[in-house]
Length: 200
Image (cartoon, rainbow, N blue to C red; front, top):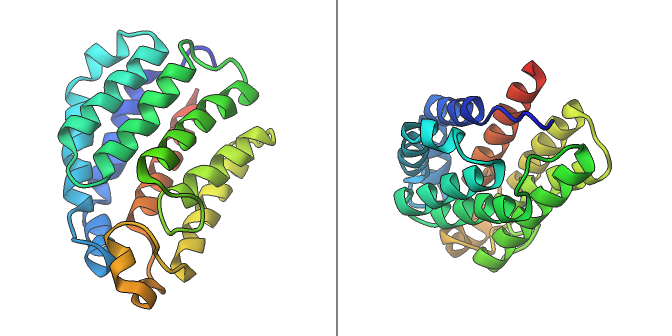
């Protein structure tokens, strides 16, 4: 795990977000303001345009650079939240994690940063409902298949949740019955990372 292919991770992330932009937009139109797809595409396109510079940095600095790019380029809540995730992970792991336990610690730092930035936690129908179970799976020594399953289960769980954070919270009970767009984009990114790591 020490030779993390940063450039390929950046490319995979941008590709999967671009491929699912319309889906993310539709999910956000149901319970948000409908801009999640476009915002995510804009942000990850900017990260990919900086792929050469990012890939030339040490692991931690690369994550922080990608995170800062998202903060600057992504509108709405997604930029600050995804940016906080990556920047905190970068600060927690200056070098690429050498094993799953260390990766769990690095991801854990990112999850805590998202909780703090969004003043939220698991169960509020947000990206945390995917990220926290993924981190817990890693902390338990999960393999890639189990990490994928944790992301999928976390995403599926948001459908029955009542949103208590973000624009969706204004809908109250009407937010029930819809997948959370931020949880969906998080699950997509988790799968993209897993795909790259499996190829290594």
